[in-house]
Length: 150
Image 1 (spheres, one colour):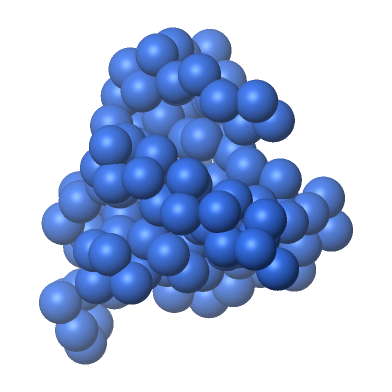
Image 2 (cartoon, one colour):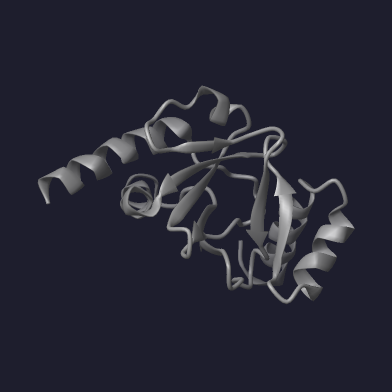
């Protein structure tokens, strides 16, 4: 989607994960950081990769799938977060990858304006499309192989 409708849809989709969607929108608009805390596990889980592996995985994922689901980057902490279907975090087994599912809160920037703390590598488009965990795992293996080859 493009234009204002796509942006509104992405805002609505992300805010719908919040217990108080209007409060979420308020935080994005009025917070000096441009972020809101949203619960994982309802609309999506998040798989959090260390940046040294997350960035290459995001690159391979983009090559494989064209447009993956939303991807967050926390530059200061050096982490990349892939939004995946609910339930994925509980089943994911990979060394160094943290899963955020039910009971976990995630720092989420406005879907159109990047925040200073966290930004979107791939912003949500409002469609609800998430990264396929199988394609993400294959991309992770390919990225690790590329890193090992130098």
